[in-house]
Structures are given as C-alpha cells and as structure tokens.
Length: 183
Image (cartoon, rainbow, N blue to C red; front, side, top):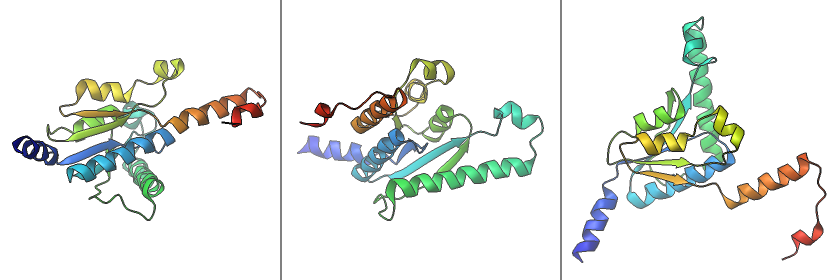
C-alpha cells in the first residue's frame, strides 16, 4: 500500500506537460499523447508553437520593423489556435490548456518552457529522411539532450507510415495491387 501511495504522489508531482506543436499529422499523435499524460497526472497542458521571423534572427535585425514582427507573432498565435481546433475540435482535452507561442528555434523554445524538473516534455519523433536530417536538425534529439525534465518521445502513428507509402506510390505512379487490400 505504501508503494502505491508513493507512485501516486510521484505521478501528481508533474505540474505541466509541455508539448511541441506544428500541426503536422505526426505531431497530432504527440499532442494527443500529451493531453492523455496531462489527464493522468492532473497537470496543465502547455502546447508550444515556436516561430521565427522570416530570415531567422539575422533577418529580423536587417530591416524587419516592429509591425512585421507583430504580424509574425499574430500569425503564430492564429496557427496555434488552428492546430488546437484541429486536434481537439469541440471536445476539449479535459485538462487546463495554456497555449504558448515562443520566438526561437523549436528545440530551444521547448527546453526553455519545460525548465522545471517536475515538468514533462512530450515531443514527436517524426520520420527523418536523409535529406531532412541534413537540412533541419532533430527537435526530439535536441530536447532529449538538453531538457532538465523527463522527455517522452512519441513515434509517428502507424497510419502515418501507410499514408506516406500511398503518397510515394502516387508520386512514382505505381499502380495499386488489389491483392494488397485483402486481409
């Protein structure tokens, strides 16, 4: 009985569940998992959408005025609302929802937001092609390396892999074999 009490106490110690938000189908899996973790832990859900001005930080120093930065921030806020509406619709996640837009790179914004050791950081792992690895660093890897709190890495949905396979088939114009559809 004492062990169960400690486990419940530890589960309730998490104050916030922070999750990165992009709006991609793979990211929706991480967002739903984060909502589930927040319900289990009786914690607040903090979806974070990171944004950068056009041209990155260097571009913002070279000619973007305050009005352009305000427009970028407003666009990020609107994007966050759209993603949350898509993810949860009329049904709310069942926990306190504290959406946040953060200026910066996704990994740094997430690690900075989930800086308390009692937080839980949820990130989607996504599919990483060779080209994507070269062009864009992995947010999940950055968070796993730099976070001061536990990190839950959520793999993409199995349906995402099926959707990608159908997309590749359509791009390469490979005909569908009807035998694949039968169980």
